[in-house]
Image (cartoon, rainbow, N blue to C red; front, side):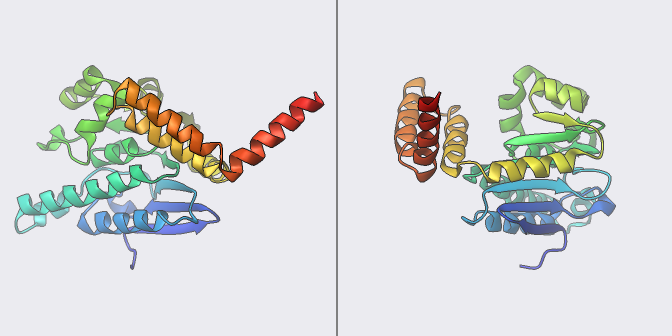
Length: 256
């Protein structure tokens, strides 16, 4: 697949997916959505153990490309196809059995929120702003934002963002639970890259299992969650990583 709007690179066991339309603040049109979906499929390879998402230019992602919507022969059909394609890619991204880190800066708006909410860990430059953006152009949410945002920040705060047009600073986004770490401006990508490299070296089954268990906790009962935990840790203890790490730990304990 040829990439123009999205750049895919592999650095060891880390896949780097970069939104590459800086002239339009990495706004997402149908081509971008398809290329992003293709990049996610490549990142599903077993040789990839962590994924880093970022954006070129001054902003991480301004959301859907309004120009492409306005220029479409049938805007409703186009927007439906765009929302469906991008949401499918984001669901595939969040389902990857490996850590997904987003390193964001500038602004995160509209569908860009969907990308952030589909990531496991978000690192933000201090000057980053987070905004709903949909209502400002007469649109409603897509890309799982209405589903994921209340789960991340609670219904009251989600409605606050949706109805008032509030703009969150990176520190506020961190306090609300949208961001895991805030860096000085210009250092977000380096921190995200270092984190991705670190996680790529960690026990893959342990990370994948933790991600799956935490992600599924919203959809199952307490009893089912406990059963899933027991099944997963029973399988984890037999993996090569666990056997070696437990042996090293017990050996060190015996030595005092």
